[in-house]
Picture 1 (cartoon, rainbow, N blue to C red):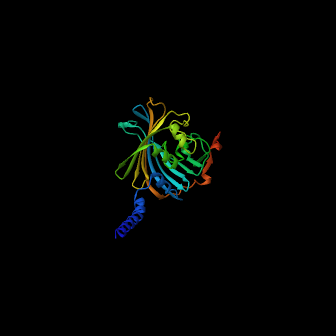
Picture 2: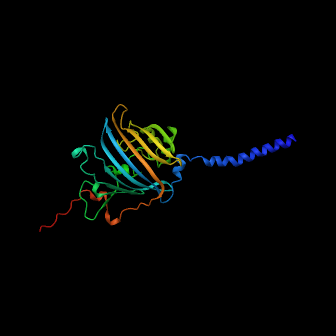
Picture 3: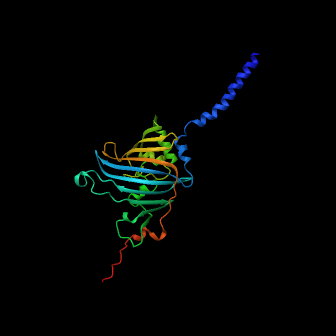
Length: 282
């Protein structure tokens, strides 16, 4: 009788393990890296809203606002469409308010091709051309094009996101988790797939002595909802740093980014030495 009782208990324990084990495994939220990789599907994407400021001491000198759409493919972020503009400092106009809203500029990246609107070009452009295809470094476009962002941390790169999480302390917060940590530019260069260049100093990881501190929030689904970074641009004793605050919404929304019409595009190199023809005398 005792043998039958022992056998029955063993069967019950085994059955409970089989039934409960997979359910428990499925019930937990996915990790941020796995959640990100699940978004890498054709014509899926995310929307972003960002404010970036550069500080000299306690006062910011340069500020930018960036709104973008990022399109994914199986390999990650394959295209972006964004607008950016300067953010005027308080007191730049009459009555302590900005005199007028600064103009917005647009950047489109499809694969390796990057286009920026002609308003960002300092020289003359032929009539009918509205876009310039960039084939080398061109101001802010160089840093905005990869991820529609000035963040020194590319959250669409699984290797970088994994390294950030590994160097973070994690705490539960309402709706998800908060990750906080710090990494030097040199470390960022080692974990990045490509050649890492800090978007604010313009220095490569090998030459930069700066570091990045972050607060990264994820939702109940493991996806990033907000990233706030402080990017020290030089030695720790300097007072020059950048602070970037990005919010991520509508993960999984349909995003299809297309290149501008070919007849509206001119190559950047073709503008070298361009001088418009003078209008005929009347």
